[in-house]
Image 1 (cartoon, rainbow, N blue to C red):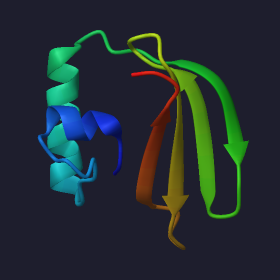
Image 2: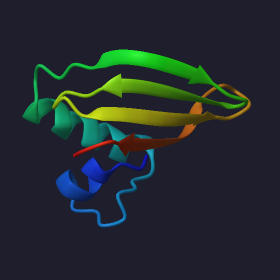
Image 3: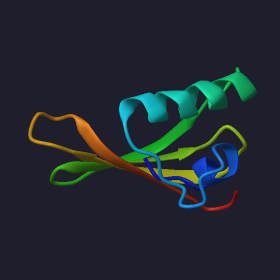
Image 4: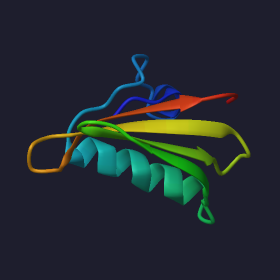
Length: 85
């Protein structure tokens, strides 16, 4: 998973973490900091082996997440993009 929020909250300059355990720890920390975390879904774009979810985030920022799937339809990579952070 890659997002600028990982660089800030996980002290990982690359903004990337790998593995279910690390992604789970990232989300646990994020949800603990913002317990009423909500997204406003704006649009969904479908691709071949990927999907983009366009939304307004918990802090009002515009965001798009690209999720890439393997042949078993499991997410193997997620990359988040933000208009403003």
